[in-house]
Length: 373
Ligand SMILES: Nc1nc2c(ncn2[C@@H]2O[C@H](COP(=O)(O)OP(=O)(O)O)[C@@H](O)[C@H]2O)c(=O)[nH]1
Ligand SMILES: [Mg+2]
Figure 1: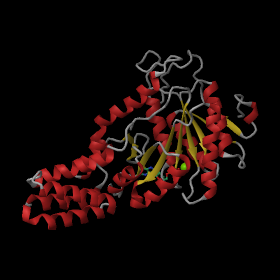
Figure 2: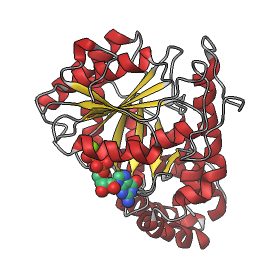
Figure 3: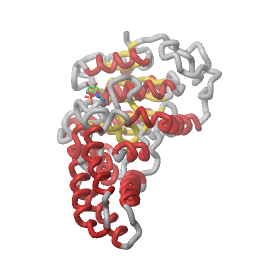
Figure 4: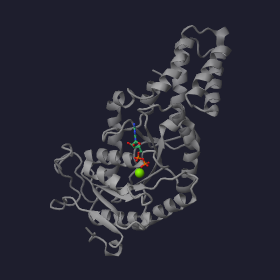
């Protein structure tokens, strides 16, 4: 069905209609029945027009929820990393000062095979060596705690704001970018579910116009999460036009957040990068300050290969946060630390499976406890 919200764009975009919410006052949230857990208009997250704290609250709330999800987040994942790092416990159990060089060599090896990368590994090992030799660390237990603290520091000191930063204008716009197959569309669907559960009114934008099936895949997620979607009508539609259309619709109809899917190709693909730049420009023309977040999806199973990808996407479009996917599989956790340390970009979410609820806010402490457990 053609969209009536913008005649200018109606020729190439269409809005898949779902029951609309506009029988209620604007910006109030409703129970949809499908998900069953969306706060109603009398609930905690009722958001009146002009109530600018809503997005701040939303970002923070999602983060706070992470604490209670800690077990679930990492209990099944990182088996490989855990196994590789378990050797550290054995090493430190019988540690004594005269053994320092040998123990640190083996610790270095364990970190390297877990994909911490040479730069980070050397940094950590040399910090520990200094503290051991100066007498600050006197036992295996103290060394293990210092090791964990070092990793935690690497994950937290360069980055602030791990909550979503959604600005104060409606709609907030989140663009999801990354190479093909990393988990962009899936993460977008899961993110929609989470945000909707907190009471936000979500519009999806099928900005992956490169692959014919991409729109269908996103539409399945829209149905699953009971969200509206704007998708291209013709195969020749430009991604930036679809996103423009979606953000305009979001603005006109009082959506809180527009989640924009994008195409994925290799990070070395020039036309992909050009396309992302024009998508970014296009949405900024509709809402000042948009996109509020550009989240780069990185496949956790690719290990250190994610570093060049992250560098490239960041240079071209300016990434504001990372989503690390497939941590439920054979992901090697060390690369997370390398990416955060090198780029100073926070991990905002982690993907821990293929189900709708398998996207969790990243909690650095839980992550460290999980990989060194
Ligand atoms: N196990 C697991 N699979 C995932 C996760 N995220 C995505 N996938 C799968 O990875 C594949 C590619 O995902 P998709 O979202 O289509 O990637 P895109 O090309 O970046 O949009 C799909 O089969 C997803 O089900 C995750 O966190 N865990
Ligand atoms: Mg996709």
